[in-house]
Image 1 (spheres, helix red, strand yellow):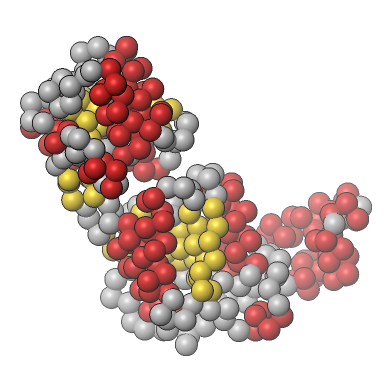
Image 2 (cartoon, one colour):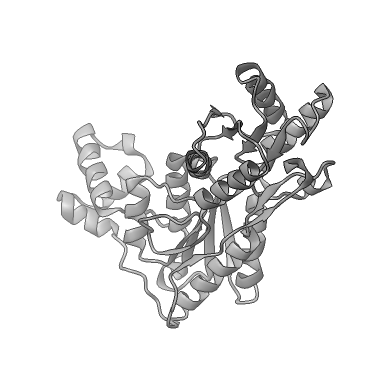
Length: 335
């Protein structure tokens, strides 16, 4: 196996840069308040400059590969990411690799903390579920010198390897389909305001502009849920009583909106067409069935893990950026 790791900064490197002893540096890392303020500032600056990552793994692991893959996901409850992990482990487990899972709640700052934690255990590679990272996250990954796959999206400036899909194009296709069926006043509902929510909103506005129609949206930073979908539906009706369609950033909102329509006696799709993203099973079980975008999450996980296994084995890599595409599920809620 080819070990592509770079030499990681050590306590001695920090000591050399600051002109202090390793013992002083070690004391600072255990308890920053145990050293003088000026000393803290010098060591902290050196740690940041070098991208130093404390080692929590046993010494034996610092001299060999850990045969572990770190996976970063933004949500533990979202089915989207459980499918991604399932795809990853279908490849890593037969190859003899363990997975270490970390959750960061859609926060780039929390992702930074979790990346530092995983790297401290000397994982052999990382799989990330977002394309928005802090500068320190990027620096730590560069210092570690391990393979990284960014999944779900198609970032323009990737860290290393990419396996994802074009959410902007998928949203544009769904809204275009909605317009082709006679809708003229659909609006966009978004939550969380993460990268994928914003990309889908851009796709919605592209489709509306191509049809020479004005776009309208309602956004919230709250987490998606069926309840929130119902609340946004009522808010949309109050603000835009002439609306005739909803394109929702995900199926949680779309299902919630559909359930609230049924409770209010609003006919779907006759009065209001509704579509979502991710094609969750609950949407297909609804009546009418929910139109949605089929996102190949499990396939993304498999492809991401397959790329990593090839890189770790030192094999040639004909592809470093894979777009798995999307499919529209044209459920009955479109009309």
